[in-house]
Length: 114
Length: 119
Image 1 (tube, rainbow over the protein chains, first blue to last red):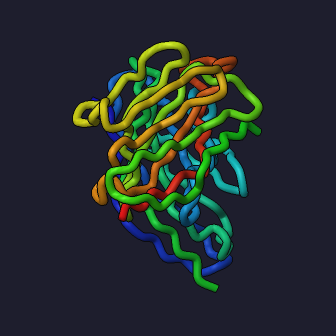
Image 2 (spheres, rainbow over the protein chains, first blue to last red):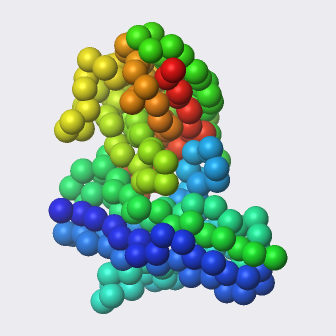
Image 3 (tube, each protein chain N blue to C red):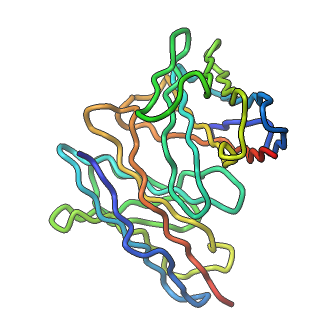
């Protein structure tokens, strides 16, 4: 079975500091990994994805994520957080045997304080 | 970028009535769309996969007769909550995959969600 875990319900960081939102995955087969962000009462916005290739993936709004196969992790990072980054972040993995199925993590609320 | 439009964004209805939510892909074709339900402070729960021109595929535990899905064109899927009850109150989100892109690498594009409140 495919699954994604986001161990932190909430992450607090000061504006200007680097941020990390953690994600670990369990996939039988090649992992296709995604990060999405959700603002209150809005849908999800795509940030970035890892399919293959370079382990460091760059995405929207200055976010990046590092794929680590040995640790089965795909942590989301940003060098300098903005207050406007405060939102709910979801990690997701696509089922390698059913491309229509995505498994989402439980979400991590990022709070960036001025 | 690809845009998915979802309407209405908010709807309040009386118990026992039916509510229809529309999901449109504005600048791409989507033979497959997906309907999710999100509870407060919870992750997304896939309800069903909507297939253009054929019947939807429902996840286990989702009532087909309660949540009617129609995908009549390459750009439109609708979710109808029939005989709505207060426990159906939730945030419903649709998503779509661009049919022109490879199935295994394309990301999902999400609508803005619809907040349903059943009184």
